[in-house]
Length: 283
Image (cartoon, rainbow, N blue to C red; front, side, top):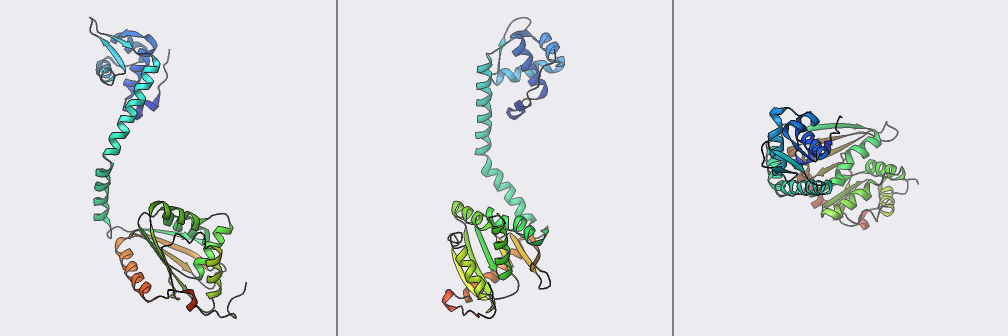
């Protein structure tokens, strides 16, 4: 008879032979090592170590006879003990997570600036779904400088059923993320900016600061002082936004964050300072 191999028992640290030995004993109820080897297809060189471990975990009983005999617990007792072992392993791992995170962080800090990661996304959809999604996973800070092309891309995504602003706002609220935005505009694009702010006012409530500036022509986002998103627009492309770059590089992020702080200092604080040119925008 070929016994099933419950691979989920790997999650509590049981090897294949230990799992087979346990299944064979559950089948037999009481058995010696030779019987378990035969019923579970376990090599004789492995059986005693396997049973010793199972006994140490409280999954089987050992009868100190000659030859040594092993007895199975009722199935509900075994399952309850397996759940307990899994919980103990999980709690032990959780208690060590801070140390593991510190180890990973130290390794990442050594790599930053030397091995930047670069990803190119094409089109409006690629920009939104691949490069703006990291904003909805930020944990500390987002610095955004946006222009007309960004507003159009976000509007397109929202109308297409992808509420990216809502995702960013929800994450910011849950994790206390600082999100400051400078909107760059021209006289021609001021009307579009006003409509954008009105249409998305509910999803912009979690933004911790908003200011307004003349257009620079180079929108960007800096996420958690490490990830940079650089949207790319061209007037000859119908949609305007033809691609974007996502770069993970501490040095670049620091440089753009420094520039953002200077832009923030000089930017206007109130919409009342925007003078709309009605000739430059059509609904």
